[in-house]
Image (cartoon, rainbow, N blue to C red; front, side, top):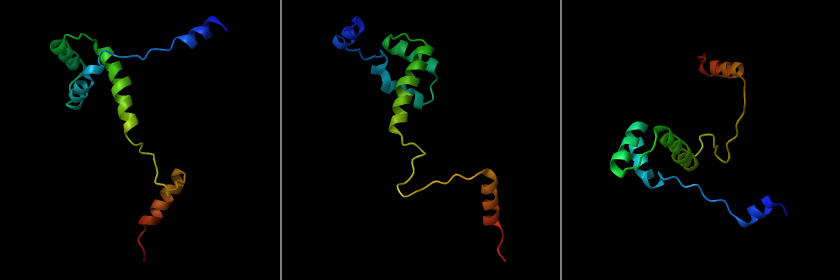
Length: 105
C-alpha cells in the first residue's frame, strides 16, 4: 500500500464550510431585493463585523446560492410522460406554419 493510499484510507476529506453560510438567508433576501454585491458586503461589515471582498461574495453566491436554486427548480426541458418530441429543420417548420395560417376556401 502506497503512502497516498494509506492516507486516503485513514483520513477523510473535510467538508468546505464558508463563513458566510450563517448569513445565507439574509444574503438571499438582499439579493431578491436587488441590492448589489458591494452593498451586501457593506451590510455584513456594518452588522456583523464580517469583512469579505465583493469577489468572495460573488463566488459564494455563484457556488452556494445559485447552485442550490438550480437543483430545486424543475428543468424547463422536462417533458410529460406521454409527450414525444420531434426535431424538424427551420425550413420545414416555416412551411408548416405557412400552411397552418393559410386561409381556407
